[in-house]
Length: 277
Image 1 (tube, rainbow, N blue to C red):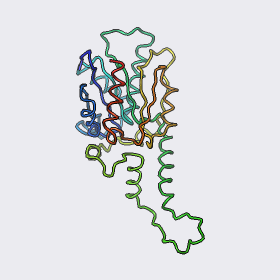
Image 2 (cartoon, rainbow, N blue to C red):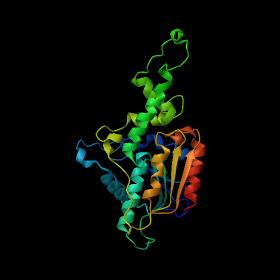
Image 3 (cartoon, one colour):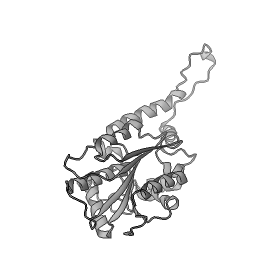
Image 4 (cartoon, rainbow, N blue to C red):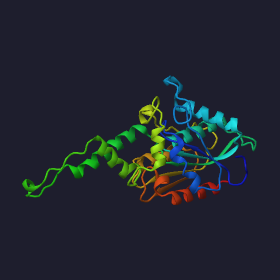
């Protein structure tokens, strides 16, 4: 994990509390790097205490720092998917605040670069976007038609909650006919104490203070049909204190580009990290 060639990837899953199962395909599409997966507190293979006070973004950042120290990971790339991208940003911001205007030390733990994949800057905005996209999915089913032959039309039933959830999945979450096994496994092992956007409903990304050290170069990645909207990811420009911020949209993909177009996704992630090895 501390090799100076093809530095390892530390992968941060989303949710909160959706464990790393759905990120495991990274191993197949980025085969020449070590990848560190771990399940954050409250899901998967980690403990799930019932005390809600033990859960927060700040606690998750502290857990990540402790894990890196425990494992002796010193030079690495950070990959965060969905909420994992928020966690990646907050980790980098925390380190930047700790190292205010200090010069880098080669012996320090160092994040070389980061990829934030389908990560929103503004959770309240995401909730509004979810409502808008869900409403749009019902419009073709409303039977709204201005033709004069309305009396001859067969009424179209409004989808029930399960049908609407599946419509949303295949349009904006994972555009495959069936939910892929890694994602199904993640949902099966998801936590319940601190889960989903309700757990971070007030989150809006904020820039570090002016005297913080520069954050690592990062790529902001999202799918063309992602429910994490273009407006939401555009907000990262305002909060990163590095000029080296790159944007990439995956054509034909939604929220889980890794599962939809794995080889293309892997090549994008690996080639970006290779620039900063």
